[in-house]
Length: 305
Ligand code: GYE
Image (cartoon, rainbow, N blue to C red; front, side):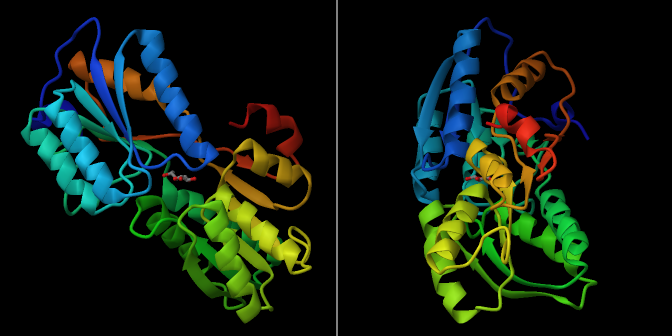
């Protein structure tokens, strides 16, 4: 299925564009790297970028999109914080004749559709990311583990899908149990606090699966404060692959990381140009993800974001 055929708002071919980028928050290195990549590419092309930061509020992000519509931007890049509340914002932009490209997170597919309500989703396959972590863990533990899962932002597509993928990968393993699963909102300090509480209630834990690096790093702090050895007596697994986490793989405190690369700028703007040129744009553009292990982390560190 290709986007151009479906009656989406058209985008004229112009020498320069005024483009919106509605970011979800900027409290972690992943978000900062993504924003920088978007800003750098806009600058390189000589496009005007209208940037907003929803500061962790889906309601603010909805009004940020409203203001971009009012400013009549040519196109909106949106990183929807949560799947449901932002679906309506996507439809509003479409009704106003402004095409939307979703970056890194998706909206609820029952509420808004790729190729109809928005042009395309560019990002990772989150189900697969979770599956890769689960499959690695099955091998590494020979199917025996007491797992604490630190979930991402409630209602966000990566949290939903990383949980689904992981749980599907360990499903056939009677010796692998998720003994607790709670949200840490993709944030370092929240991850630390949640881990601190869960650790007291579940001292039998020997694996922490965090939906992103930030929560994994927070969990490591909680484990160390409690006298546990992250990476040794409690395995730590995460997703993202920022430089700090890759260094922790080298240090032996994180055992396995699936990459989720935040450098969307070049792909995002290339897609804009293809769309304006009337080329067929696929309704999903999936970024390839690497992985970091004790074997390759040193060699790949310099190329991590
Ligand atoms: O993993 C996390 C960020 O939406 C894929 O959001 C993104 C996730 C990423 O805050 O660190």
